[in-house]
Amino acid sequence: MDVKILNFETVVRPPTWCEIDLKALAHNFEQLQKLAVKNMTHSLGIMPVIKADAYGHGMFQVAEALHQCGCKYYGVSNVTEGVSLRAMGLKQKILIFESTSVHEARDIVEYKLTPTVCALEMGHALDHIAHEAGIQIPVHIKIDTGMGRLGVNEDQALDFVQVLREQCPNLVLEGVYTHLPVADTDRDFTLGQMRRFRDLVYALENQFITFSYVHAGNSMGLGDYKSDLFNLARPGIMLYGIYPLEDLKKKVTLKPVMSVKARIIFVQTIAKGRGISYGHTFKAKEDITVAVLPIGYSNGYLRSLSNKAFVLVAGVRCPVVGRVTMDQIIVDITAATLSGKMPKIGDEAVIMGTQKGETISVDEVALWADTISYEILCSLGNRLPRIYHS
Image 1 (cartoon, rainbow, N blue to C red):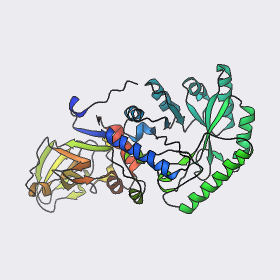
Image 2 (cartoon, rainbow, N blue to C red; image 1 turned 45 degrees about the horizontal axis):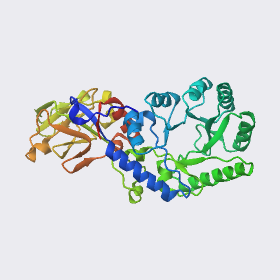
Image 3 (tube, rainbow, N blue to C red; image 1 turned 120 degrees about the vertical axis):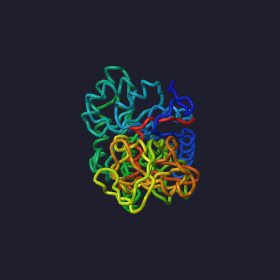
Image 4 (spheres, rainbow, N blue to C red; image 1 turned 180 degrees about the vertical axis):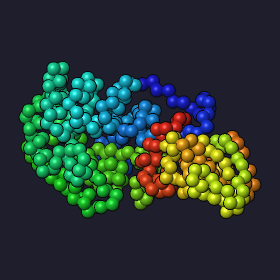
């Protein structure tokens, strides 16, 4: 593969940007591999999930960095993502979570992708094209044990797999998996899912149907549940240094991979009683000093952060005042000026990350926006230029 990783010093610095720490990514990959060995009796390691442009971190750069770490299996959402990875030269296995459209079957076979099969129509299409090509292709079967999204209903799964084996001889039943939708909120339900899924896998083994890969562990599943059945885990959010549950900090040490920064583009004094931004939802109760930062909802900084969020200026937490606009936010930097820092145009502010020992985490930003860290990472990462530290 030949993916150019841009270093901070080699690019013209944009006014607002994401920094992606590939060393932190490698650290997290190593830690999750160790966690998989600890929590899965027959661990074959992890399959990092790099869908949605690697949660806003950059799919190509993340894939290349993980390749350097020895990653052997990747998980992506759709065929387009898989084909893109093949186009960049990735040779390792790629599992497609969404592969239900028959018209995608030819690309799956041509680009040697591993599809998820949960409909017989797709199985037959893949089998036909594989037969034409004179090859067999590996597939994974998804069983719905409680997600209610994609997957063969668990009550129909045994018959489905048997029919697939009998009618599609050019498919290699390489893997079987399910998904744990409430692993962080309902342990009893999740353990019930795991038991039912185990019973199904054992019933298939009694029919002489075995799988090389048996998996269910998303980040939370990997981090908080032990298994002697699963041998592969599919961490997503933890790969990027985010804990789906605070208690997991006791079990694995991760490093945030993304930070977001901007340069101050304007500083002024706002007199007591004056309103700020659209709708004047904020009015100064005293004379304050404000700075304008070139980030807004067009850059993925959600409007719901208006009058709720903080950013770091000179290592001081400074509140976002007034409504977030399309291209800018306004920040009350009075506390920074009172500490003797005197921020000025061109100074660096931290939207998410660490500055002078103070940190604003993605979880805090998500809490202020009344959403989840996944949305924050994808919104910011997909809309801002990225600069990679390797």
